[in-house]
Length: 259
Image (cartoon, rainbow, N blue to C red; front, side):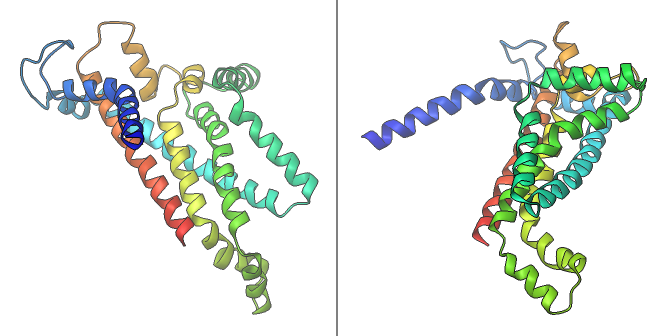
């Protein structure tokens, strides 16, 4: 009885969490303008997303921004984790502490600080991708770091030493041994960085210009006026993409742990 009560409680909690998203997903396939009644079923909302030039360019730009910032964040986060791992104990502890600051810091503080530094102090234009990319890298690189560090700790250090004993240089040992051992953490961190950039609103809101608007900022602008049905489809696609990516990240982590 106690087991079933736990299962029922978990199901109720999941239902409460996902019910709003499920409602939006259902209405994204209807012709109804407002939530409350269903007049018919249609894929018109999804067709609109990819046939309107403005919406299509915004979606493509947001995905490209997420991919570019995730690539940079993955490189920086991985190199930072490796550097901290092979540093002296006091240096490693200092780097770990500094990495935790942007993780626990409020996004609004980070976004406002980046806006002041890049746009006000350095005079960068909001119409360029540069402030957005830097902001998203600052947001996601610490999480890549946190994803790679556990894999470094689980790695058998003698493998790298054995590779160098057999004639590899330290660089060759890194690419042939170390990078393969930590690859699950690197991939998981890259996926996390991509999803964080994809659905970031706060930092994007501070550094987004008029020529390009990210998907979350555009969705927020729609809440200030009567919501159009196409937003239901936009919400649904964004949720499904993030859900698939997070599922893939967890599967990669499980596969890495089993290996």
